[in-house]
Image (tube, rainbow, N blue to C red; front, side, top):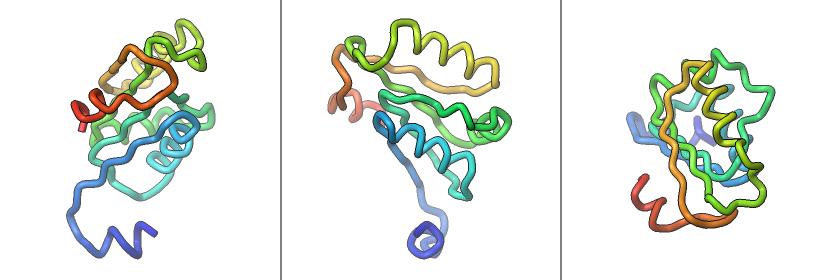
Length: 115
């Protein structure tokens, strides 16, 4: 789809958002594919274990990464975001961390600020 629709357009900005389980899918697409993303937003989800840290680190140098979690999200275990921060720091991955008061949901106000 990318090669048929986006690539012929030339130099266009490509931003993507993964929500919940979509974060794993978006992560794999970003680090294993050929698309050059300008921005990736990982919202209320997990980085999959099969992602190569080196590939992820290379991606982060050219792509703005934002991780977003609700402070009342019962699907995100307590301390998980801190563990993820430690893991990503260890990989040398730079990202912005955002939270909002809310559950496992999209927050329109925060999304508007990010994009």
